[in-house]
Amino acid sequence: MDAQTLTTLGTSLIVALATVIGSAITAYFGFKSVKATADMAKAKEEMASAKKELVAAYRQISAYYQLEQEFIAVIKTTNGGTEKSLKISHRDKVVEKGFERPSVTHNQAEKRIRELEI
Image (tube, rainbow, N blue to C red; front, side, top):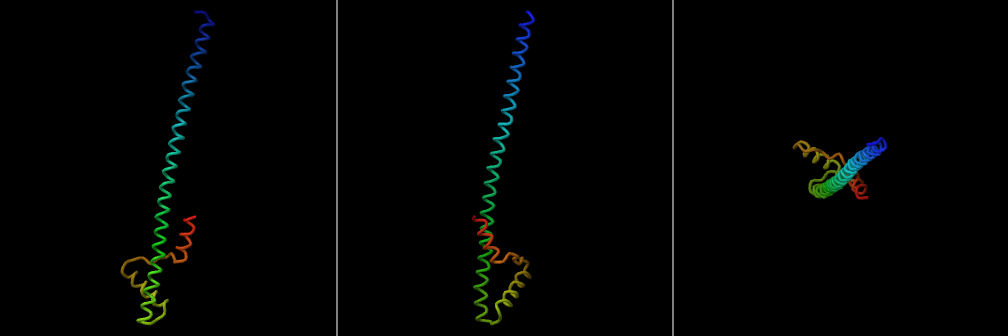
């Protein structure tokens, strides 16, 4: 074989290797991109689910306050006292039984529901 044939074969071999390596690099980054897109879609679904659960929890807090207001109104008519003093005493009893006193107010819960539903 002469020098020109060897040069042509060498050049062809280098081009073939570069093509294979380029294809492998493209396939790798394509795979990473598809995986990242799938992971992002899964994260968005999980976030949407968590958001729905959070809205449901805030609605339950809001309902708790509505229920408390109904009971306090009934207790006030039968036992007397102010709404504030009745709420404090009954909330203290709940805390004494080992339950947590809500730190989120009715208005805060309603505001967060509106914010999350946007």
